[in-house]
Length: 284
Image (cartoon, rainbow, N blue to C red):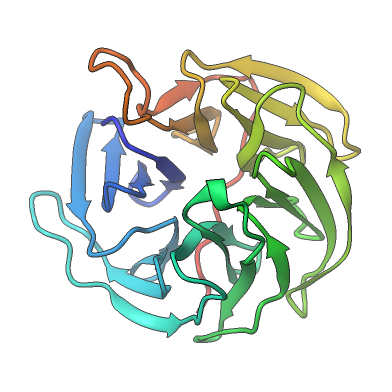
């Protein structure tokens, strides 16, 4: 279970299983703690993020939003059905981080895959009621760190590119599904770039410090509250799960030159002593 870029861990409460995607590996993974069963399914495109769908999964892939039927271990994944396409602002782009808001609208951001280009062509899209809206936000290099407060009234978003490394907070209109009043929430992490994130039941924001092997917990007023360590540097995204939602699962990245015996690219399980929230499913 060592991924090139392990991303978008999502705990599926009905299945009591953790799903996540390996972006360059074009693979969807599942681990079920009750019997330690691991399953994987090949995908036709890179999937940057996933969300639970009433009939399986939503995937934000290279050029749009797709729906994947429920999966069976040992059986190949059915062909994903494209629900909505986007016209990217530049060549070589794909979707990256995303998730559903508390009302079940699916949000996902895009990026130019070659991060060395540092091109601010990333866009933030909302998929709801069967359609994808015009970009809600733009001028992003690497859209990341999306999360919603427990009451849904605050949206978080980061730009994890090395030239920015900032996390923003927005006021979020839960009826209209629109963010406003963007302001800096975390100007920079103590170490590492901000990557994927999660929210706990206290409303605190957990953000992966990529390249630092750290997970940081920030209170809703922006105060650094706690730091956890992971034994690999490139931590990518975290998510609460398990029967009590008190396990923090952390995906990681495996660089091409990583030694065979190294644990980079694995998924880690931490018990930080706080409870998370169930991940909202797409509401259609």
